[in-house]
Image (cartoon, rainbow, N blue to C red; front, side):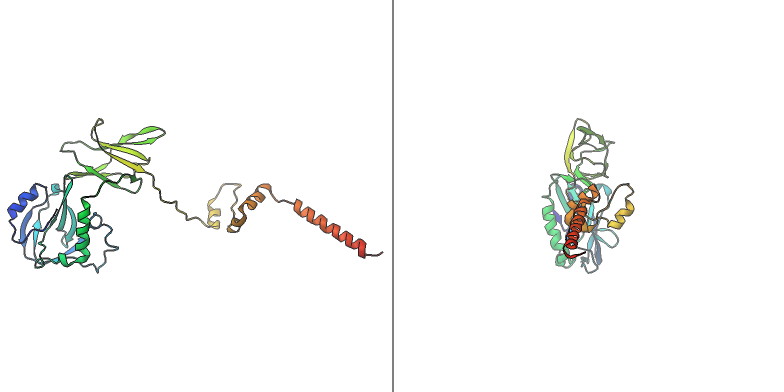
Length: 289
């Protein structure tokens, strides 16, 4: 749901609705021109939208906007912010739904957001598909720093734990990951605590599994960069190790064979014998005593 409150909106009615989400309340309309200065490109809506946030990016300007509350318990995620850090467009999660709240009306008399194609068009598209996002079938070890799940902690000192994976045929011990609760969601920081591929359980108590996550090893091709021959010789300190140069690549089998058998002289002996025989024949034929 995307909400643009009108400049003449009934603030009490809006705040009653926002409190049920919960989302930050409207605190009064100010007829002051302000410029959006920051885009949160780490959040899904604007992630991978811009190649770079250059100075040429035209950010929205408003001639009037509402001041929004700043209660941390509402779990606001800023998508667009004014120069002073206050929210122009905020995101709130409620159950399986998402509310987007703009601090300014959409009409062109108060805001040029609708005329800012660089922001408005990708914003609407990504918002439309954000609610349809599903958890990945499997995560890649080392690639994801944070995973998220529904928050079932309603207070107290309960902490989330994870266990799973397999090492030498045994299930790994449980561990307590870094965790940050924002409204109805809990963000689990992995912090390089998962090394083995497998299935992992998220739980509060040992007898209740809240969510399951699967992790695979990274399937990207290995780094094919390598040291030059001279650099490799400097780093190798193991005795009886020899390095083949690039010229040996054409006939690597023959080179390895020669290295393993040593210098082969029988071929040279046959050649010298044949040459000596030829010289002897020539001497006997043409040298007259």
